Image (cartoon, rainbow, N blue to C red):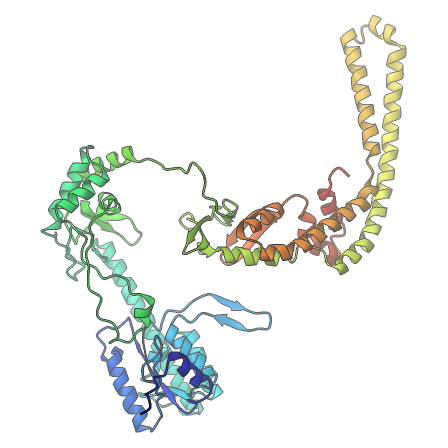
Length: 573
């Protein structure tokens, strides 16, 4: 008797890649977050209609079940089809890339685009797409020959069929835009009227009505008592947390967030998540004592507190103010005696508001976060160390001179130095004339000291001071004369050596640890700043010649840029 073989997910993927299901279809259903009461939005309804259509048209449904993707060839996804990622990247060869927010939809398109399945069955156009980006992808695949079937519509391969598709796509997007606008306008108008459009905090009941947030008969008296106790100044946050625990006060029952596996799972794979309550902690108590909602106020459209028409005040303004005064008095700023050893601390800033990106570690990965000022144009608030690492690596690859650039510099700088030498000779002539004048003045003073003192032209002190001044001027002119711009050739050699060092350090940088990379970065760069997805930088003194080399080598109107950069590199030359 043969043992029945059960196909693993790995076996199924291998079968798909081998082309076994090239003549099969996938059924796709999506539950919208916009219309919870619409029957067409039901996953079970879509499954039934899609399956009925496949059997009617004699379409083979792929008999595959892959966890987090499909069950018996049926894909069920709970995700908005309207929202999309705004980040777009364009490669050098013209390839446009953007992220698809729907994970199952993304995997489905990957499979069908490579021809592993013949097509997809969907209820109607707005189930598969409600935004321009995904819309374009589906249309491209259809033109490529992928067979997309729709239960509620049939699009002929004619201009009329294309127009029909355009209209359905336009109306599906328009419907989502209108729904979004209605929700936004309703919330804004309600908030302007003092209606609470969000979940009321502990101490009030949420009955599903924005206009009515009554007191919680069990929790409200305890919350009020906590305000009164803390206003005396004799209670701490931990004392109130213990008091709340003794009184049996717990948070309002809420469901935890779904895990990634639960989001991708089929409807019947997991039981419904139960609501749970938790004991109050010091953080809970702190948030309660600082929430102006308890004074009978709610947030307006601009985030300011106004008088509420949805709920009554649990505590008076006077009591709330007393509590804030005690909190302020007990507030203690905590400073690290030693700063945490995180690479690139304090060097990365926001371009617009100049706030520092603070490093922190999460799940073994270092991230940077900036708390920008209100209204800051920069929306790139958070990124990991890899972002900075890759950007710096790219910059360093452009901070050294290539062999061709060095040859071009040698040819260019020879001409520039000849011009500098001519200018230097003129300067030496001027120095010689000044020295001659000073020598004559010194000779006159030294030979006529007695007459100058008797006539009262100089006092003894003034005469000594004048003689000392002339000698200092003569000494300074001799020092200037010793400085020669011919040393530019030596400076060029030093710059080329520095360029070679940067070139040699790049392989070491690529394999270095974060703290080692930080040392290299701080040697070369004085400032790093971020704006959106762009890293801006300033080189330290001595590296400006590499930063400016392109304009020096390529711009005919800037013939002196390289020489100027080199002079900044060695200002004493």
